[in-house]
View (cartoon, rainbow, N blue to C red):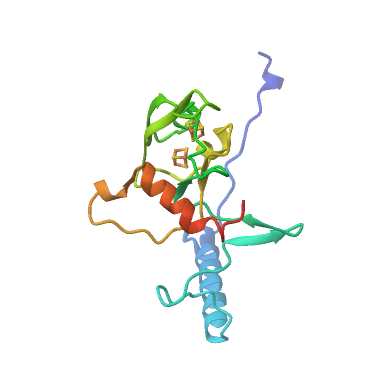
Length: 177
Ligand code: SF4
Ligand code: SF4
């Protein structure tokens, strides 16, 4: 390597203000004041939960509702009310948190080979990345807007097939696809 190829970087000189983080502190205070005046002026975005709930978790785009939030999963049903899942394991393979557990069985229906005899998702372990719904070839798994779920034990937060299908029933009318 030639000497001319070497780039020497000079450390930038910090002023006294920079050394004490004064510009950054003033910047932060400015942001705090801005929010304070918004709150005092009635333009805040504070939601008095649980009396009030956020209604802005979907936006209208080209005449269609589009999700802006990923919450609890649901397992979708087909027109005949059967679980759409064909137990292909694509979602559990794609899941970075390894929180989907599927047990496949021979399908009782003629239009598919397999169906999920068991389908569990650990909602506490999930990072709500949406990879599972991206991976699903038949749109059987979907994340909803539901965020207000509670459980007194870890076990309660492991959603099984019936619970995931129940979330579908509860959200099918008001969830954007
Ligand atoms: S949202 Fe992400 S972490 Fe959660 S189950 Fe799906 S793939 Fe796994
Ligand atoms: S939910 Fe979709 S990706 Fe997951 S096993 Fe069922 S069909 Fe496959």
